[in-house]
Length: 165
Image 1 (cartoon, rainbow, N blue to C red):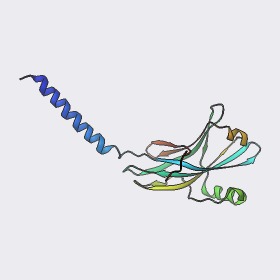
Image 2 (image 1 turned 135 degrees about the vertical axis):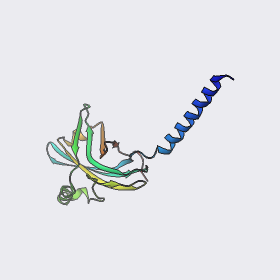
Image 3 (image 1 turned 120 degrees about the vertical axis):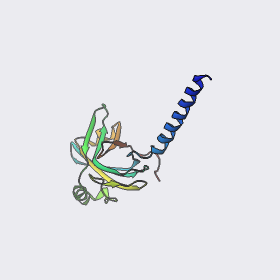
Image 4 (image 1 turned 60 degrees about the vertical axis):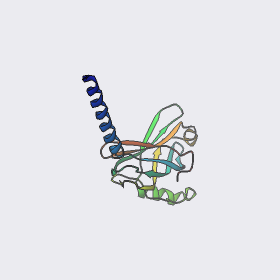
């Protein structure tokens, strides 16, 4: 008997078992997907801007995603990455009450300790303040939302180019 046949069969069976375990656990990790659906901004000063984002977040996995931090990221025209922590819900409501042209807050805010249950999709409002002019904001390279899980997993949402359903 040729021992190389037994070694090859053993390796094939090991690879098959590893593949089955990988496939079964692929949805067990904490992960999210989604998109930024609507972007609203208002200049609060000559050099200050508040960005209000309406987002849709989906947890396609089988694990709970517990939010630790939420922040808004802007990459300006020069490539500098600016980060702002998400504003609290009362501040967003106060801002929207004062600036009626922005419209109301349509969704709850995504904040620390928000539970994103497995298989659940929800819409959230997120706001951040930046030291930018409206022209600098319009010339930005990118706009993203960074959501961090309590276990350290991070995801970033970008504006949707097509309607998200």
